[in-house]
Length: 115
Length: 112
Image (cartoon, rainbow over all chains, first blue to last red; front, side):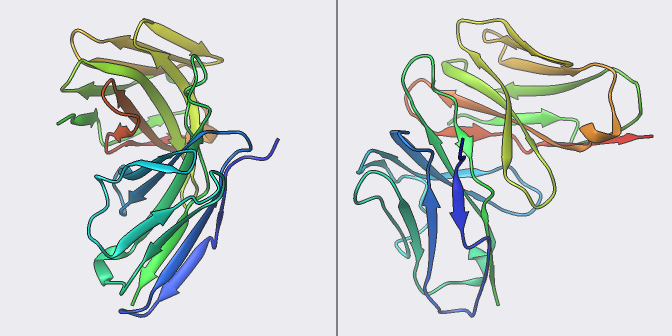
């Protein structure tokens, strides 16, 4: 079956531009997560949705970062006024999140480069 | 705050060797632990998930163990192959939240 998909796979932005990254979770998965992975490091949590509700946004690094999942399926991570330190791979994951099916499945990521 | 550490950061072995990757975490109140594989420029592939009530999980040549009380997990890879070359990440899910906290990964190179 189809896994988690993300688009675009690569994005180059000039400093100050706004970007929008899309995540299509596995169909029927209730939970959706966004992570940020800097080069050579493990992913770090950004935000979590259960259906359309954003239950945890404690990992968002600044108010320039905004995520939504209006219909409880597709999610968009938006970064306003991008800065060079925003350059990273942005990973999306989804999960059924019901016992015992609480494994998180990851998409291929979007590599963002801010010039 | 949960912290996850993986040792070693990098490992190079000849083909055929059995090897152990280590993961430690500071807060033993975990819900589960996942081991992932990441190939260069790719996303994460889930290898094994161990629930907090379990001691180990096996899949093919992979065996992962969990010792909650000591805050440790190991990933054992038997008869390593060049195709096993990748970065291996462990991640814990805390009881209090749904997010995963990742270690920094172990970069494995298996030489033919």
